[in-house]
Length: 248
Ligand SMILES: C[S@@+](CC[C@H](N)C(=O)[O-])C[C@H]1O[C@@H](n2cnc3c(N)ncnc32)[C@H](O)[C@@H]1O
Image (cartoon, rainbow, N blue to C red; front, side, top):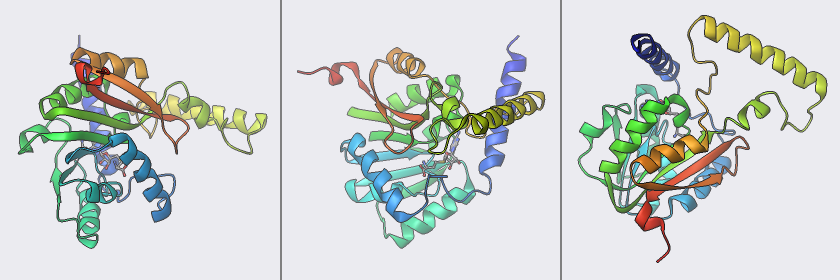
């Protein structure tokens, strides 16, 4: 009964591997240094310290190089060789001697790590993982998290807001005809993706905060949700051990 499901999941995974095979940037709203540095500042605020950091799905290292000065040791992980190639150039240019890079995915990464971390983070990555994969990710991350550590998952697609953004409702020049045209276009994309068994959206899967909270809870974590500052349709999940999150 689950054979078909597993096959679909692995086909979708192959889709994302192929999708990122030649990409060289993380698809931020703007790739200007000014914008990325502002995004990084917001993220550093939520990371809230720690000395060691694992950046899962680090992509081209656009955020990682801004995290680097604040940490003693950082590890960037990504399954895309082209992304890691860019990351490695950035790390060299910025002389971030405290950063190492590993090519791995959400399953293989854990065996390649040599130590645990104060912060385990991922920015704009959860939409490429199924709920089952997120569950395994949180479980594995919990085994590589130091006492008092946090798992900070940035920019998760919010299924309540993302469809509204997709049809242009948040755009400054939104009007009813533009919105109807976009709805028609999106329906065509969804239909074609379903027929071809591809992910229905290039940005992958949106995950409800309630589901993320349940997964975190299952492994003894408490979650705080924060609206993303630069993406109206995304949110962050800050996950820490239940006992540590309670005020003394
Ligand atoms: C949208 S980009 C974000 C990159 C980076 N975090 C940033 O904010 O600039 C998503 C990254 O996650 C990586 N990725 C997606 N799924 C992954 C997986 N299962 N294992 C490892 N990397 C993955 C992609 O290769 C890509 O570099």
